[in-house]
Amino acid sequence: MLKRHHQVFSSLLIAGDLVLVALSWGLLLWLERWDAVSAPFRIRLQLGLPRAHLQALLAVLPLYHLVYRATGLYLPRRFRSLGADLFDVVRASAVSFGASVFACFFLYRIGSRTAYATFFCGSLLSTVSFHLLARAVLQRLRERGWNLRHVLVVGCGASARAAVERLARNPWMGLSVAGVVEDAALEPPPGTPRLGGIHDLHEVIARHGIDQVIVALPMERHADVARVLDALTRETVDVRIVPDLTSFLTLNCSVGELDGLPMLNLRESPLYGWNRVAKRVLDILLSLLILVLFAVPMLLIAAAIKMTSRGPLFYTQERLGLDGRVFRMLKFRTMVPDAERSTGAVWARQDDPRRTRLGSFLRATSLDELPQFFNVLKGEMSIVGPRPERPEFIGDFTRKIPAYMLRHKMKAGITGWAQINGWRGNTSLEKRIEYDLYYIEHWSVWFDLRIIALTPFKGLVNRNAY
Image 1: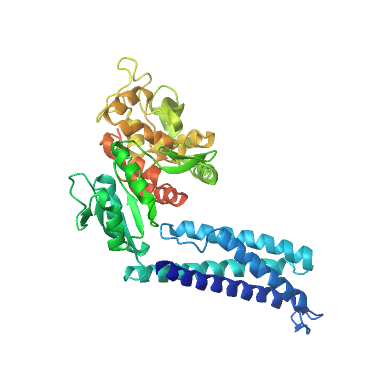
Image 2: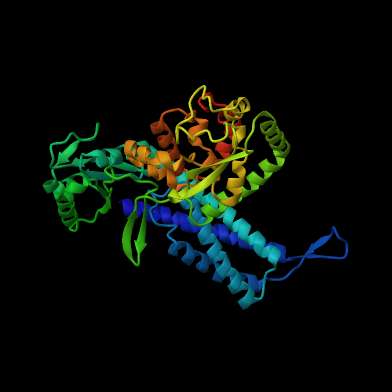
């Protein structure tokens, strides 16, 4: 029944896509049949049957359909996010358009650049809008109990509970948990009935009309996982496995492959490909802008430092950055020269006697950190990211918090998610790491812009900055 419903929905999608492509082609045809005459604001419609355009359309429609089907636009997409859906539609439209231009221009000798641009924009925008509408309608139907798939969860541990909770939080996916099967004496997730043990799989699947099975057993029970998968080879249900990663320190988990061998990436920086380029471009442009805008204040600060205390203008200090690489961070000097000669590397504290009078003000207002935009231009830091720490303290931090080194999968920043939420200076290290890891897990250019916009209001003046 579910497959028949999916076939009906896919057929409607296919028909809608082809109609929209044909209408967009009609717009191209309309542009091609208008011809400007001598008066600049007078146009006339050419008469005659556009036979070449109609012949080309008979080639374009199957071409679009084949590409859309080959890229998986009509497969079940319950586990696909909105962003992934939009990316697939745009990619399929771009490939189809490229093939269509080749066929029409070189085989039929029709079409102008303006007409093709209009056709591409029309077909892309209409197709994206149509798929968004179809997705919204389907999600609303699923939330109301239509087009549901029944899911059986194998296991009652932490991974199984997480799977049940997330399915309950996302009713738009149309996945209804019928229950769990488990041999161990564990309590099932709240509100989820235990339907039997692993040996009852065949009976439970048949009795409850199960469509999908989610295997969520802990890693130490790999023998039970193998037994479950062996039993499911005699069933037609879809099978998914939730890997038990609760005992590992993970960051941006993803699935990759090595020459066809599936691999699970446990620790991965989000900065790769165009993400890396986008963040670097944002850093360079904003750093140049800030250095230009604050050129005069920086000159005044430099003059004030020279007038109020002896010693160098700037202070450089070794910090740990991306992938654990050491760099020298630049700041305006706020302490007396050779402040750590007798004490060594120590935390700054309230009423620290090593600070100069001007230095106290610069630290409290974060103005001492303006020279760090030169570190950003050199590529050693980013405007947004976890605050870098001194190598002398890293060993102690990693012993206290095993996840500490994960924050070095992102370039160190002048401001960050932890800083604008108040976790700066002499505050809880655990909370700082929690916010830093959240930032890395959810990084995007828009998240960076949000943090930058909030920094003047929440991140500059801090009573814990000594």
